[in-house]
Image (tube, rainbow, N blue to C red; front, side):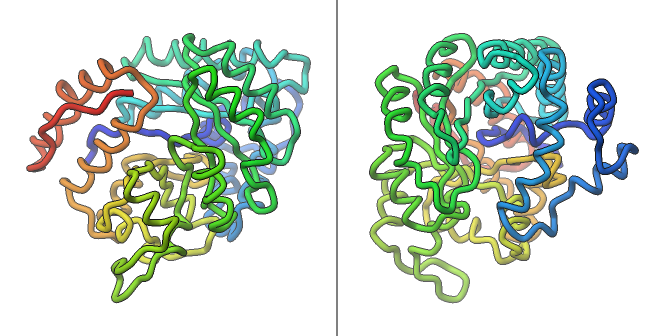
Length: 354
């Protein structure tokens, strides 16, 4: 069953079509692990990676073929087309522009190429979108990325993020960049609680004052679980739940980086305990997934029904970094009617503002 969905956490360089990777690699002479698109899709599948660091190694090849404006525009356009074809009605796609400057593109030219591709995809599909710029938390150029994001705010860039390996690189190392985007009125979401423990999560929430949490799944480590349900919360978990800080949960990605089985993921417990859970793809290529697949995964292994899917979609729409009129149009004209037709009973109020 395909239902309208909202994606808040999708990496541009993690969602390429395998055939596109092959074509772009041939154009620049980049050597791939496989030249057949099906074989390459198998190689990119990080289902058995077991750690975030190993999972991230696959990005060497996608980043290498995205070093021209034409390639970036094509990848961005295809990302919008593919998400829309899967029922996504609004998506925020993120990437690190400084990783795509190795062949001489300026960071501004990189961002402009991505914006052009996303606009072209939206013109074809009607999907609404926003672009989030990532700084790599292990690097020292986060303030440059923050300034870049502010320069392109109002032209499609809606937020700033820190990505990359989390362990050993707490978000508060980048407070200057974070304060810059906050003072400029740009939205903030931070990868935290994916593989850096509760200290990283606390830093993102309390020191950096993030609006959303990228992954955040490790909040379960501050919860007491009994018989498959959360029965009490530690102070950090209680704060995140009570403030309804959105968790950009990416189930398949978490299974791959942590080695969990589908029934072991805490997303169902977090949802039932009142956390602001959203469902996302993270990296469609590396996790061989889609929003339809994520919905089916939580339906089969986490007990979600159509009302639960409507609830997390509504939470994602409320948390989106887009204007309230876009939210209301998508909710009233597209999302709620489709879920009601599928049997959902909930969802009556208008979306929250941006």
